[in-house]
Length: 88
Image 1: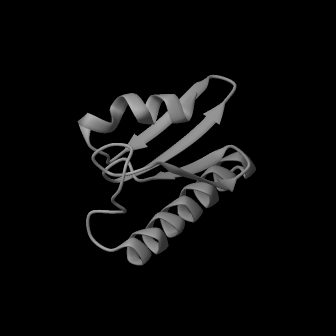
Image 2: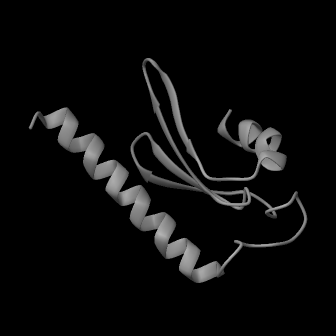
C-alpha cells in the first residue's frame, strides 16, 4: 500500500473513532441547544487536514486538500447552511 493511501486510511479511521467516541458522550441525537436542529456546531481537528464536526444533527467528517474538500455528511438537511459556514 502506498504511503499516502495509508495516511488517508489512518485519518479516516481516526475520524471514525473520534465520531464514535463523541456520539457515546452525547447520546442518541447528538447535543441539543441553540444554533439549529442539532445544536451548536463543534469542530475537532483529527489529523492534519481531517476534521470531525459534531452537532449538525449527525456527525460530519471533512478532509481538505489541494484538489478540494471531501465531506462525509450524516447530518440533517436543515443544518446544511450552518455546516457549510463552519467548513468555510
